[in-house]
Length: 92
Image (cartoon, rainbow, N blue to C red):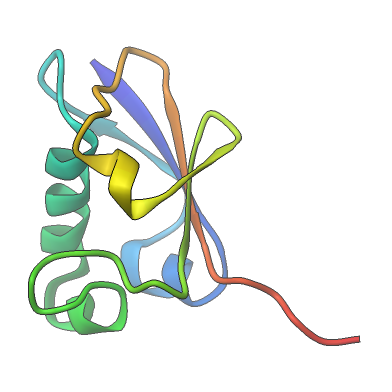
């Protein structure tokens, strides 16, 4: 199945432009994040902590709804889902 991964700013520099990730059926959000961590390669520490969790300053969304760390382990993805990773924007 295909999951769309949208990235912005520094995350796009690390993971590449928006893409589709081929996954097995019933992949968990945690497994998808592990695949993205591997894709980040040497730059993984810019997005992930040593224990494999996303840095708390990053925003993770599933189909337009924000996902929080405590929800990640309970989520299973489906064909056509869209994951968005972005850094909070500030300024004026």
